[in-house]
Structures are given as structure tokens and as C-alpha cells.
Length: 318
Image (cartoon, rainbow, N blue to C red):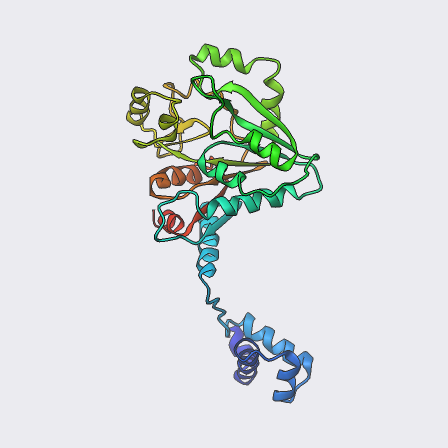
């Protein structure tokens, strides 16, 4: 005998009536009690029974409902610890609009914590757009550490390195990486990372409670190439080796495996913090980044994602 048979059809009829009065007609439990000639406690139990027996299907008639559903499905499908999906603008080709604002809100929420945290920050256009959305804050209890070097090949400050902008906005202790993004040789990289002033920053990055990174594609307009960090021949070599995307300079393939050699043995970025002990959130959307996002969540290079509806739907279809 199933549960509905045990409850009885009359009881279910009463529950359905109470549920309709509450969820559809908008009555209070006191009003339901009066209309059905029962006590308030019985009305409450009937409304609860209607929900538990699946007699009531709640539908939120608002665009954000689809975002919430997509986020829940992504979280379950890829075993992610945090997912936020923002509405897509069908008329926009931007790869930052919407997710930059959502990322800013998440960063701000973390920084509002009175308990001290270590926040690691990557680089890139989306993250820069997010940091620019932050309100001025006073967060002396927190530490913000950069995962990447902040020196471009010509010796100038890397334009999309956001550690200094963020530190100025939130007044937290900041720990930059005063290194080139990509060293000239593996030997130079090893020498630079072993400097006494760099070691504490690397150690701090490994202890991050939460990390925010972008995902850069490796197509013809790859950010690493357009920003002058790698040459055209290096880009083609990475593509030939199967590289499809990068996170803080680390290039990986469709399976989420790091490409051996080429530029990966010269990247001066810190390793991504542990996804088992902390939260590593990628901010990424758009068709060009789709393969890279899919590889990152499948391989658990990240365990959090802020993206848009179109990208979320494509990830679930992939």
C-alpha cells in the first residue's frame, strides 16, 4: 500500500483544498481554518501534507528562476561547491557583463566577514571588471594575495593584474607577486620562485580560503597572446599540443590536463589552491571559453563557477 492510500482520499482532498487556498489563492492559515471550519493547527498540517505529497507544484514566474534551476543542475552534474548563473543578454557579445557584477557581489560578501580570511586573486578582463564594481571597504583583517606575476614582457605593470586596484578599494593587506608573468626560461623561473621574498607569498596563496580566477581561451585572440605574454609561434605550439584554455597562465587541454613544456615550464604563477580544502571560483562565460570551462569543471581545476544562462545550458548539453 502506498503512502497516499494510507493517508486516504478524503484527507488528500482536504490537503489539496488547503494547499490551493494557501499557495494559489493567497490565504493565510487562519483564513483557511475559517473557510474550512477547522483549527489553525489542522490547516497548517494540511498545507504541509499538500506539499510533502507533491500535490502542490510551485512555479516561480520570473527569468531568475531559470538561472536558479541551471545553477542547481550544474552544481549536481559537476559536483561543484558553488554555482551562480546570471541572465544572458541576447543582444550582447560581452564576456564580462552580468558575471562581473555577480562576482563583485560574492567577493564583497566574503570580505564582509569579520573573521580573517585569505583571498587569492587571479587575473584577466572579467576579474578586473569585477574588482571595479567593488565599493570602498575597510578590511584590515583580511589578506589578499595574487596568484600571478605583475610584470609584462616589456617591464611595465601587467594591465589586467588586479591586486593593487583591489587592495586600494578594500584596504586589506595585499601580497603581490613581483615577477614576470612568464619567465624567459625554466631556470629563471626556478630562481625567481626560490627568492626569500617570494616564498612567503607562495605559501600564503596555498592557504587561501577562497580564490577567484578567470579562464582564458587559446584561440586566435587568446589573452596570453594579445597581451604579449606569449609569441604567435608559442600560441601555435600550445594549440598543436592540445591546449584549449588557461588559468593564471597554466595551459591545459580538453581533458583538463596541463600541457607539458612549451610555456607551462616558465609560468611564474602560484599553483591553484587546493580544491579539497578551499573554494576556487572561475568567472567565465561565452562560446570561446566553453571548452575551457567544461574541462576545468570536469577535471576539478575549479570547484566554483559564476557564468551566464547560455553558457550554463551549453555546459549541461555537452
